[in-house]
Length: 139
Image 1 (cartoon, one colour):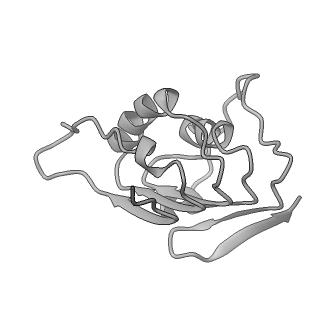
Image 2 (cartoon, helix red, strand yellow):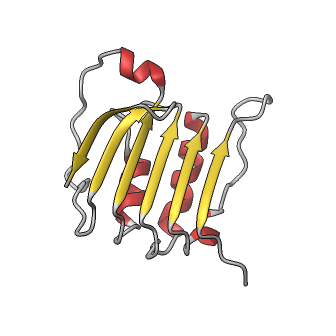
């Protein structure tokens, strides 16, 4: 069976509107060591969140890059789920949509079950979707 090691996925909505089929592809990526995931719509993010609870751990995942056109500052459930299923993650890169970097919105309270703490996490980078890093944190 073929196993993907480096995966780069960019999902964009169709012109037909917000109708998005079930994605159900995360199970095929369990052996990935590097996953870059870009979601071009909040609807795609919501659909992907439905797939994560059915997914086993990404035990080989060392680098995760997540970007998309939703407000990660106040809605990072998808990121929290991916972190929960990636116990050996070393690098996390969050690529914010450019408008998120320009506007200020009040912070929302984070639920108690969301932790950004991993035993092996070494680096967290936050920047824009062009790859320019605004914040780099070495854990």
